[in-house]
Image (cartoon, rainbow, N blue to C red):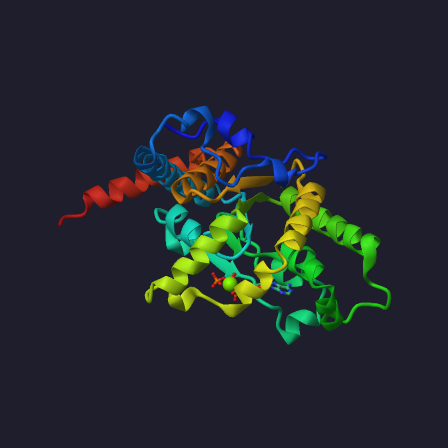
Length: 302
Ligand code: ATP
Ligand code: MG
């Protein structure tokens, strides 16, 4: 059992087509591949898919590292409590931590606000051979900031920077930026963890109900929840405008956590395999040097 290409293809936002989040069910049962399982079986089966993907990712990461040609950028966007942290923890559990950077994008600092909105994303890009996971990203500047346009006041922009044209230009900047880094060796995969408003309520209540989860609760989550419709509109618009052949968006149904993690991991593995990496070939000279090294080592007495 593995999440197949067909299942994964259903999650993609086809470039040039509307994302239609309203037609995507956050509680999707995984289609024919997963549908016939009971809840408990699904948990077990999704865990098996995840375990396999984690293994595949470990191998893919080694190849990525050895071939030293591409970096992998994973962008994670979601509403609060959709499960970004858990997804990162589970999906990356098998990967060598030396080769991975998780970068959290919070409210921008004074220094960051002194630069253009892509500056901090650009600084955090993965080097060849490495994986960077953006926990939130440059997309906050067309999502959270779009919901709260008053935050633009802090960005020292030229007068008259707002309105439809302004956001369109930001999408263009993002597409150009991602096009550039993709051409220069960064493979990009963007995941929107799509949780329903109903499920978010359940998870926020669970945080309040359990002392060991209460630390995760933040009053600002509630304030942002009050803007749910505006957020969905901002996501719809941004995903539609920025899902490109070189940096596609995937909408991962997030109401069923085990399935969400399995699907997220499968999409990432699929993305790395699409690079068609192979182990670097050893040159004739190197091989000859290796033969001499072996002789020298074997000639040594213990
Ligand atoms: P968690 O709550 O799980 O620890 P989080 O990603 O929600 O993780 P928080 O510190 O709660 O982290 O929230 C970060 C906040 O920073 C979010 O509300 C996000 O919208 C906001 N943010 C991120 N980037 C920007 C930006 N460029 N401009 C304005 N706000 C931003
Ligand atoms: Mg938060």
